[in-house]
Length: 462
Image (tube, rainbow, N blue to C red; front, side):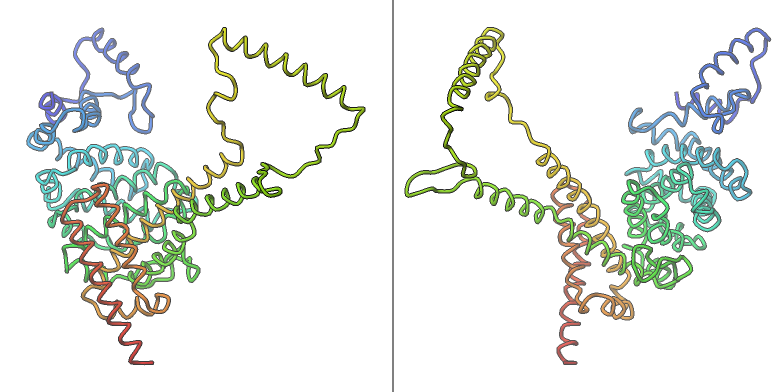
């Protein structure tokens, strides 16, 4: 099937079939088929066999077709065609021609490329080397355009955001445990600066629900590029980019500072926020409140009597006795009838049904889950920031001194603790491989050394 599609895509003439009646029938069928597509993606009035083949190719994914698809799409020239499509779109974007159309087309191409490069080193290598890195240079060109030329407050719409996110996600795939891809990406002019903007400045223009995924993917890309490459670390260390918008110290893209300073400020903000939303502390607080409520509802009156609830006056006026007895009689009759009705219908009595949560309990659970979710996000961003900071400072005394000056009391322990928590989480969930575990452990050990070294320096100075 894939060979048939690619044969049409690369060799078939872009003309309608011969025969007027046949052409009309096919055109009508095709128009009906493409009514579901946005006109900004496909011109339903000008559909050719080449366009049909392209759409068929983009609709396929490796999950649907199996591992053989990753091999066939490379050997039969499908990857080359997609690279050329993205290159063409990047050129049109620079000229500001049909931006929405090319944003969507690039995103759709990248969704397929993400599938066929995931844990497939041969496809990663092919895409990195095709026409001397044409795909990578095209994607960096698009990122540079979006991060520096687009009016973020006006034109950074959901289509543009989705395209940028797809590029970051694909480059993260391409650079994972792949030296060729990493080197090619970092050789692109201003690439690392653009990635730093994506971490430190761009998220403020996204919806709150999208910021976490965006920051984590951008941080993951930078970690991939630096964890095995001293050259890339040096390039990033010499680059100056925007200050962290989340920090109170600066919120302007014009405030260019060193990456390690911006990332340290990001860490401090997110690490502090994760403390505010700690799940265990929140659960302990709720449990303590519940214990206090239970204590208020139970107390001893006298030597042996246990009374539940608030004290109350149980005296009854003589004139009210008849009324109360009458009401009790009506209630008992009603209960008897309800019990008979329940027994015949097979329904459970109210006291036998499941316990219903009251409004406040539901609200407490909802708030706890929201705080737990936010705590998880803040913890992950803090840990990823700490990992990247460690990679940049591991062999750089100047960076170590800068971090020491920025951290409260010059203490590296919060960074060490943050990474220890994320390492335990990853081991429990199997979120990374053995090589990833070793890198994180290496940076944890580095922060331990910094704790000891700077603690001794402080002691000597005092």
